[in-house]
Structures are given as structure tokens and as C-alpha cells.
Length: 126
Image 1 (tube, one colour):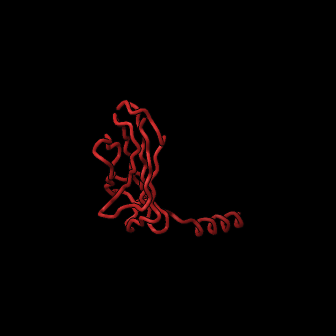
Image 2 (cartoon, one colour; image 1 turned 180 degrees about the horizontal axis):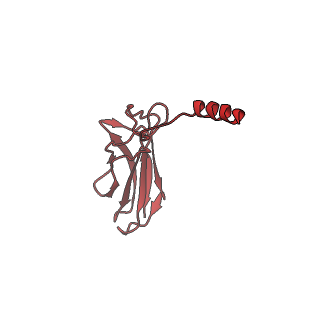
Image 3 (cartoon, one colour; image 1 turned 90 degrees about the horizontal axis):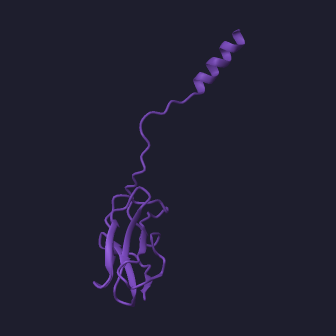
């Protein structure tokens, strides 16, 4: 019985109680060199109906997502953009859908807070 009491005291003295709520807010600054932009698919019909999704991840210097950042897509006005999720979520992701009635290839870039991501993507509507 004494042995059980000693073991109970050792176990309880080693227990750590965590309180509070986990937070995924990252207050670091955006590293445009670590952030990226991609499109899927890379081509669609120029019928104004088919969409190409543009996804942007804003990351810090450690590769962690930066939330609550407004993202802007830089593209010609003939490209129709839907601001599906223009502000980054907790993973640093922003989403735009694009369509066009003009058969052409567009070069797309993204920016945030006057910083342009160096990566560009080409999407084609035909």
C-alpha cells in the first residue's frame, strides 16, 4: 500500500497541466522568397464558365503560414477573378478563381502589402 502511495505521488508530481487555447496566429513578417503561387489546372476553355484556381501561400522565413493578410492578383482586366478567399487563413492560404472569354495566355503574379511575390504563373484559356 505504501508503495502504491509513493508511485501515485511520483506520477502526480510529474504531471503537467496545460491551460489556455492553442493559437496558430503568426505575427512574423511575410517572406516573399518562401511564399508561392500556383494554378490548377493550367488551361481551360475560354467560355467564361470553366475556372482555373489560383492558390497563394504566404509564409514567413521559417516556412510557417501568415494569416490575416490581404492578397491581390495582378492580371489584365480581361481575366475575370472571383475573390474566393482573398485574405489568408491560418495556413497562409488565399484562393482566387479565374475565367475568361478571351482565348489567350495570361501571366499572373500576386502581391500583399506592397510586396510582389517573385514567382509568376502562366494560365491559358483557349
